[in-house]
Image (tube, rainbow, N blue to C red; front, side, top):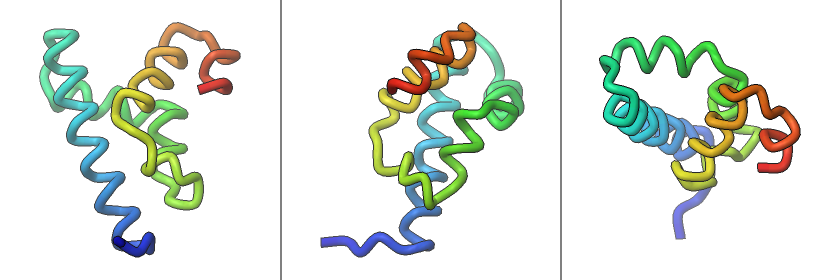
Length: 81
């Protein structure tokens, strides 16, 4: 079993960011650079970037759902996810 520590948490965060940016770029027809900039300006990214939130342990689909809720202004759904 893999121990969850700062290094593991950061690796998971990095992997999620790559996957989410690739998904957003493909889905929205934007450059990855633009998607990175937009994603890094969100509350979802802020939460993901904090290893103590343990959001990095969730699936990319789960995090993408959070991001979609945030981007649509549906904060109740964002909090539920």
